[in-house]
Image (cartoon, rainbow, N blue to C red; front, side):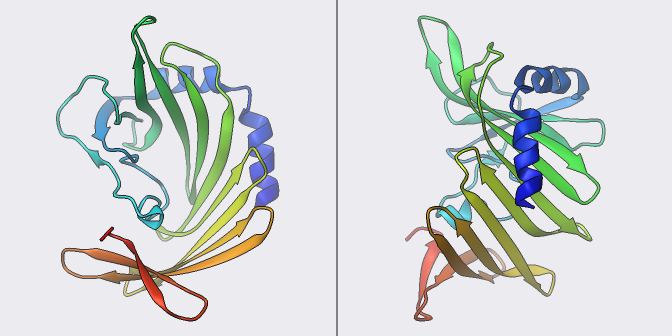
Length: 207
């Protein structure tokens, strides 16, 4: 999978402007989101495993503001693009933004994550690429590669059609594995990190 991600980094590193044009022409509807973290991620519990609450999609139309996102949907009601608003630059009267693009395949979603740019700009660095793999509409794995070479593998295990545990394998300068257990109640989800001595600490929600 890492080789595929490397090829995607190379394929899309110079296609930022082309991807913007594609989303502008292909999208049929837009929807706003709000939150410090994104309101949409193809991979389950992306924000929660970092101890953060995900953003939420809004029902009403909005104007750009800090910590807001705009999502672009295609004719199949699939999200194909995201603009995250970070900071308004007064002297240029433009927003500093971050863009993500989503390539929806039958059994996977490819995610292209670009660095900051002005909203009207057409140049940004491709910071990372990721693939979320699905079986019978359930996410089973998420693979991510940064342009610095760091590689992440997230594996999901199910019980009664709900994710019961997650394993993260991380290749940086050294290799690290993390294990999580997920407990579901009627109203809440609690995520525990299982430490090497089998003790558990709550990762989400924050205490």
